[in-house]
Image 1 (tube, rainbow over the protein chains, first blue to last red):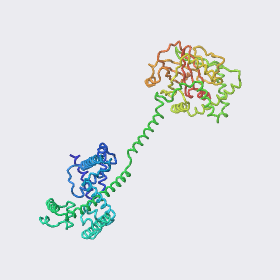
Image 2: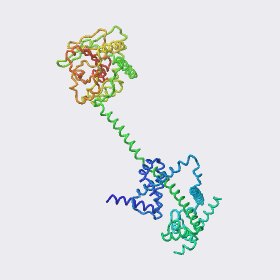
Image 3: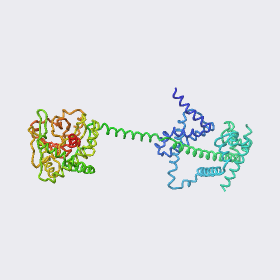
Image 4: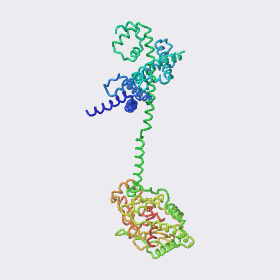
Length: 189
Length: 389
């Protein structure tokens, strides 16, 4: 009984840190789960670097879920992270297994697989849009990231960035979106 | 909400954002999706919004991952490397422990203090040892030569009167007589006197430092360290007793050894004593006795069954080629208690001889065997001079 209380307290403290935007919670989660995730990845034809990369992504998934309010605490945070890392790694392995036989010919797209082509085009366009957003600079980049990634409200953004009120942020965000679309279109041309 | 199915709801930016960010209820979502299935323009608007949200999420995730990497690196740098520190501390503790053990406790144990000489002829050891002492004391030698000469003369005088003997108490008592031989070569004798003077004076200086049992032990250990291959293996509990290993050689080896000694050590200090119950008799006019600290050497044979328990392990290590011997300095002289595998017939002792071939080497001839010892200098010539002075 006392053990589970300690366990819950530890997790609830981390969840509170995440909700407050304290990124040290990610470091704590990473260190706590490094050993089991590394062991799993190394056992399944991965390297320590693969494991660390995967673990970073897993804790970020948890971060996003908690921040967006879509995380429902039903098991220990460690269990969630290990399961996420495990699923990601298995998907990656399956994808590698699928792709590898096509690699020697170098014509994996020669089969006129339209859906694959669409995916590639979409991925390329997403990458270009991301580059455009990155080049957009502040405050547009920060406003769009706070709104879409951190899912902050207009009021919160106004407070964090020092705008007069939520309406000002709303107006600014609209301008930023238009600027991003323009930049993206210029990049396509 | 049914009207959403009819109109182009994607004209409303907030609604599109909420749709893409999944902030709508399940009912609302279903209605909007039904319209999207029919309206290509609205699908385009939603896809455009999805690309923007996707790019923002992708960039946000990448930046968060980057910051996480930086934080992890910073944390790793801040962390104290306890495993390294602890392993280093443990290593230092082991080194100190081993050092302390060897420095203070090891001499009391029957393990190898310094390995015994096996191949090097005793005569050669003697020669090297004498040379080393003479060289090391050369700076003070000139001033002390005269004293050494005086001591040597005094010893010669003693031996002429036949008072150098080896004795064993009780039924196994053996006495030897030191032979005092003066060769016709006066120049050679003079050289030897000078060497003796230097060597003994050096020993006297060393002897001054010895005031108590611990000092004595330390001096002996120091002497043993200087000597490359003594046979001393450990100290007995008594402060002036020492466990040594005598190396046993067969008769043929012994004969060879004797001829080798005679050929190699001619002109150097040789002391040969006849071990006999009778009065001491000079062994041979060709043999000269230059220095012998102990006027009496007592041999006491025992069996290994009588060894103290502390020496049992040592006995297993050395095998039959060596004889564990307890060398004790008694008022009556030097006592060698030898522990043989089998009990020794007392008649064998009657014909035994002992030969001191240098200040720290002693050879015992026992019937068909020769047992060689290398003793620390403190058991040999050095102390005698001090006593007399």
